Length: 269
Length: 290
Image (cartoon, rainbow over all chains, first blue to last red; front, side):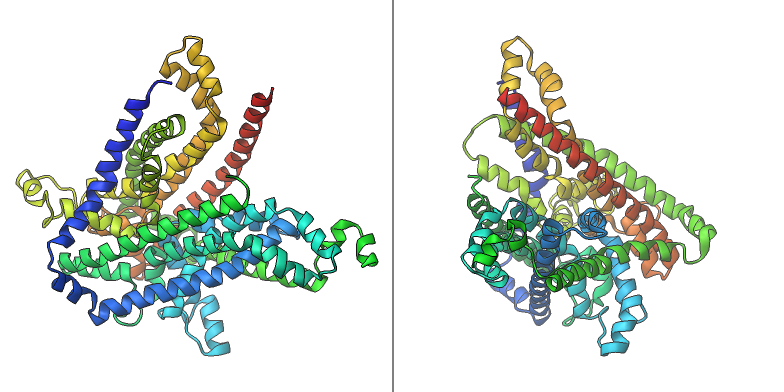
């Protein structure tokens, strides 16, 4: 078959120019720092606070998205109900909707005078927007389709003969769910969680409008990078950016192994 | 036991009514709160002061400039990403070589990198303090805080979109038809245009569609390199941010309604293409069997 050399050349040249050289610029820029300088940047209280916030908000949001997403995937695959087609079509909205649009919309809905924000404030005395809780809400929105679209195909392929076997052996529905269905969708749910978590850590546009962006309290890591850049603190921005890059690379490797495990369990390997 | 066994299988797998009702309730509530309400809010806020104000804010020179820039950026990045995606898919799906898995991981990498970092890396190269900064300043070339920087950042974030759709599709379709065409004397290009392209056209369109949506909607990466210069380097998403931060909510949501419309259109076309794609894969499997 012809075309190996030209297509591989285009691929590699483009990859090197657009992705690898720019990313290595960040590594090299960080290497200009001494280890002590690097360390001082990272253990600054404001930096640590933003890392803690980004990770905990992303983990909490991804957990909630995994729970809700599993239920939604289950309903879409197993049940028929009015509005199902519409639900199914809308699931991918967070993939397609630009993050800035999602950001201003979420802020408008959950701000203290917004449709839901006002109601939650009156009913429970909890403020969502401009607090860390607002970040979690924005990240649930972003994470939902990752979970649903990962679990859905597994449920569709799931062999209900196993459920039937469990039922005929006397297991009730709950036992069948815990012993048969749950172990089978667990790898998919974990993959969906990892995808939502990875996306949540780096997410910027949909979060900054609702977050409040208070240093030490509601300032996410990507925003801190931008703040440092605007103050011409290139070293600080780069050092924090490199940590983020390494983390996302590690997460990518974990996700790839999870997906490999998932395909293997589904008998596609 | 016997009672369970005698029931039709579908019944043994049916959940109790209250379980179904609860789960469907959670689904409808979640979809309503997180997906329907945001879409409705965009429209309600955009038209909060009537049609006239809506159109006025879209006809502002800054808004029009933002639309033009967004279209320009998409017009440059989408074709480049497409050419790269097709080349990568041909090399990866049609040949075996060492390091293929590493290459695939690198192609995926921009998906998992924070958009802010996608902007930052270009600032480090082309910015005033960057590697090429002094040289660019000498020759009076602007990359950062100008259109080229926006294009580069968008190229980075859209990088995997076409390749990621095409590679699995071309692997699934297989290369028997292409080899038949080649053995009958077709050239490489003829084989690509007459055999490969018709086979993967829906998948290719699907990738291009998602790539375009991301190119027009990218915010974080573009925000870092743009400098937010009104009428010059503000794309539509950045124009939304500026309007919103200046409390021009109708202006922000009017621009947002355009991008939300694009998102809905993307979803509709996506549903159509997925349906086409399934049919094509089915047809090619059928052909392989025969």
